[in-house]
Length: 77
Image (cartoon, rainbow, N blue to C red):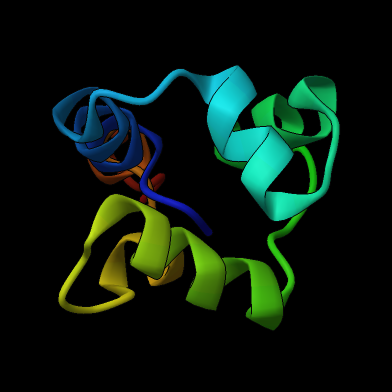
């Protein structure tokens, strides 16, 4: 699961638009948006390219265990 919030921050820091990033990945802007919002998964090759494009030192953004909102839900007892 992608950490959407952290990925959006990394994109903002890069100074690139999502359209530019999608073009560099060879996918449509719509496909990129679906991947960022966890509707579709990034391919391993796309994760590698995203790390290069965004100058990320690691790929942990793409392997979040659960969203923060999910961790705030109290378990049923």
